[in-house]
Length: 84
Image 1 (spheres, one colour):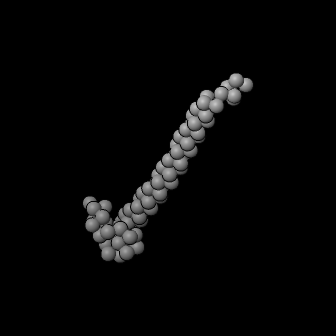
Image 2: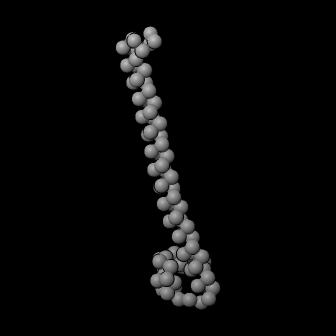
Image 3: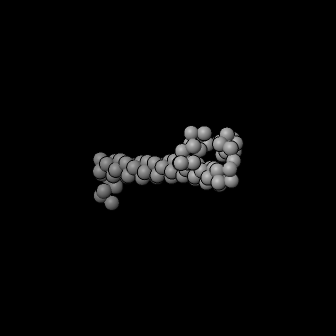
């Protein structure tokens, strides 16, 4: 009761509570952005791994490097690197 009647203390409390809410909101936002970025990188890595896997199978079957590059989207240099 006394606390709520003291204008300065009540204002300090409100400022502190706002700072805590702002901090929690910032942490949540940054976490969500980090998860989005991580998911995006993970999907990109997964797609590249799959392309490499397909390229390996195509190399085993004697496919032409240019054809493999066309099908997988990998560079010829990357395919030649995989070949070694």
